Image (cartoon, rainbow, N blue to C red):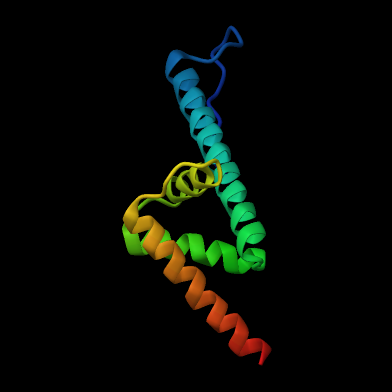
Length: 113
């Protein structure tokens, strides 16, 4: 027997208020996830362009900065985007970003040599 997550229509063909609220909440969460993903992709593009690193390495840099500064990944991405637009980075994020880029560059150089 399989179960479905989809709310069942009431006899008149409409969904009840609780089902509508649940669907709206799910839609809002999906929109937020898409927006967050887009910001991370934009920040990744900035790192790729400014530091000439492969996408996978750029993502690892963002992830590492996020973990080391205890800052959500999408927030780090917003900061990197702001930096590309001329806004200063916070001191902690700026330091961790530079350190992560340097570590990844040394790793890349070690693999190439």
